Amino acid sequence: MTEATRRERLRAETEREIRQAARALLVESGRDAVTLRAIARKLGITAPALYRYYDSHDALLRQLCDDICADMAAALYADLAADTSGQVGCQVRAVCHAFRRWALAHPQEFALVFASPRDPLGADQFGSVFLQLAGRLIASNLVANHADDDVPEILHEDLARFQQVLMDAVSVHGVVVEDSVLNLGKIYHVVQSWVRLYGHVALEVFGRFPFTVSNPEPMFDSMLDQMLTDIGFQDAPDSALH
Image (tube, rainbow, N blue to C red):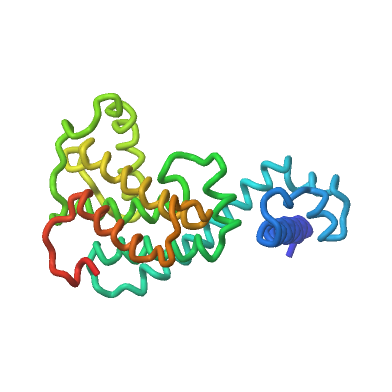
């Protein structure tokens, strides 16, 4: 191993230790506790020394978000791999349930990632997994057509830009969707579904339901049923949906 390679390895290990310390503080006490001074104290170094590894506090938080998203994606793909039905509807459900479980088990990480400004849907890890499945659902014969007339005209321009984002996101996973298949109507329903899914999970994680719910899971399942219906999941065997 050359001296340069050894230095690179040591630097990478130190950067990882810094992020691990930051994440421990996040889990223990929330985002406000993740300060450079607290991280340095946890590692036994000076706060200014951290700037040799990260340009700013924000840069460190962005990298921490990427680490968290990678861990979340691994959990989602594990649940996806465990589904052996071969049915897209079942796979959508598996990923959505995995997302909810992960968020409830990691409230501070969820808050950091999903309350921070991020790139458009599809650039983050959860968006990538969800859109992969949504794209496969759209490309299948199980999805009904949605007319562009169903979409408020004021949203046409934004959704047209997002069309390419969605196509790129699903193409990474080998799903090819033609422009004629992925019209604005379908994009509109996919985006609405993501918003509803995230909204339900966020309200549950932050304890912000407008009324007391002793067991939110049946409400979550009902939302998934309606979400798949609204996307246009046509008649299929019951085993494909549950």
